[in-house]
Length: 469
Image 1 (cartoon, rainbow, N blue to C red):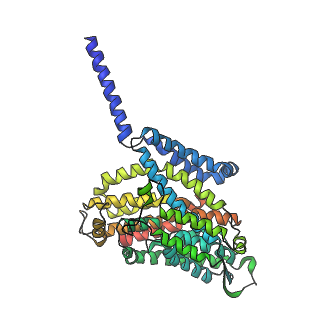
Image 2: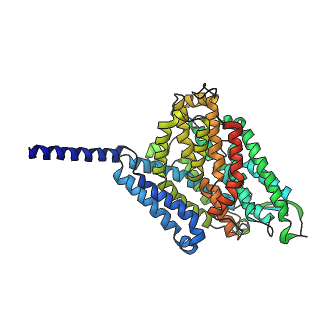
Image 3: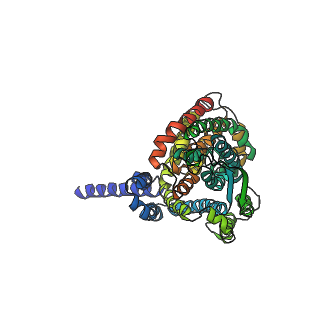
């Protein structure tokens, strides 16, 4: 009898172990694996404020170390972990290729605006940046204009000048075309028509940009002329290093060199099993060529160095790695709960996660969930076109599918302004301004002093006007 009991207990133990291993290799990662991502976010927020010297010297080690913890778990203990790591590495290479090439190319373009910063002049520059961010991306527009913007306002520049630049040029501005922001470009690659974005996002874009500019003008008017009083210059605009605009054009064209855009275009990943493609090779090559051929006076005038892009590269390497389990939980939640999601919930959840995670996978996961709600497949470009056109009415009432896509698109782009890590240009602009000894709010101050009291009301207004379903 005891042998039978021992055998039963042994079998039960073995079954439990089998179930555990099955969960380990086939299901979601352990919840504790979210700890490295949360730790990294907390340290990014508190490091420059409470332990500046340690953070300045060791941020790269901290970021990579936390990333290695997650990567090791996925590499050794998850059945499909290596595939997840490879996919994340490919995304990181695409990300760093784009922002580093734009950073280097724009660093070789010295724009001098022979006018002192005043409310109307600054507003016109910010509006111009918002418009061109749809043509050269938020990263390109930010890197091109942040230095002349700071030079214009030398002697009177305040923290809010940098913050509103991040709000308008580095985030909201790029919401009108797929070129403007990575989530929209991903949607385009998946099958969303290129010109779907402009008419559907235009009104929220106008409301938000106009409102932010009005607030900015009031704050800027209170600043006065600062130390530059009596030195007004009414000249024009001069540009050094204009040949770099050709490099800039090559980068923008390279963005579209993808089999999903050009049918039959070769894919190096598929042909040679590489973690990068022709697009990334072109971008890295352009960055190298642009730096070697750069106008030295332009580089000197911009006080160009690689420290801002170095910090972004290290921190986002850790962010990309540590957010893998967080994205898995999000993906699972979106797949299992999308049927109960209203437009409101899609808007707020996509936005909240885009503010602290990479907004591209947040967009993708909730986009897939919204498609599933209508019985459509994210792997089918025809299904996506139907979804964008409005295939029908959801179970929540007379809400067509295109409103779900509109909510996800607006949220993934606009909420990127909530934190420095919501969008890559945010961090780069912050670093460039800090290196120029401009007063820049730290991570927490940016949130509680600017993004929550200024940006959040606009996001709530957009929800009330367009997505309150």
